[in-house]
Image (cartoon, rainbow, N blue to C red; front, side, top):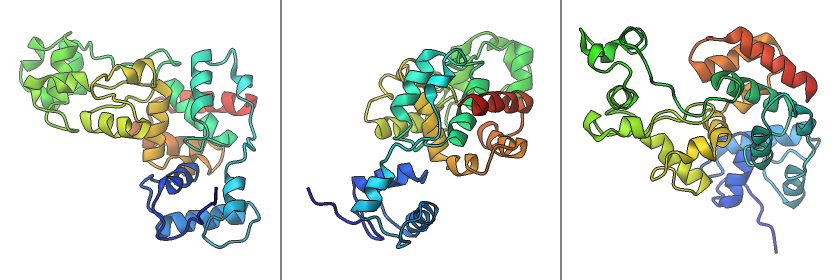
Length: 264
């Protein structure tokens, strides 16, 4: 089978694969941003810097020259996480030690050491006022307290593609996975990406794709390039801000990153 050179203007599935491997937004359209990333990758790998991908470049791109051993993670993280990670490292271009360590540190912290795969919404009335105060004015929180379905339906209703509170889609598409995929639109986008219907069966995100959905978040938000900045505490902080929206639990995330990075 002949290989068609990928260049500005190319639009096909190979462009999507290329974009995933380069940690770019995946749209299958080879534009200026893809060209710039190709040139950077070619420079890094000592190849002719053309901004185009020929057969030699393609074969180089698909080599498994990883600088880590996932088996070293045994006894540090659950085997189920390691198994799922092995199935997605190439698809999401998690192909260096920095990316693996940053990714796992964030997932581990966000999920309580890979234990939580679904959002905990069992808030008391005081908890609701503290966390979701704007959705519960006055004494409204009292009638919603300790009722996850009602809470999520209200808090996530009429946003992220969800219907209003009465549809209960806010609860149906509540946070799942190690980095809480939330909202109907995000479930649909994830479904399209993995080619499996998580809109009709959202529990798949928690049961089958908790780590894959987290990698989808990293990919969508171009976090891999931030991971590549290095192993300093400041880089962990940068990644944390993108994941958390702030720096909650930063010390634990730094601790986890250092452990994973050292053993990989």
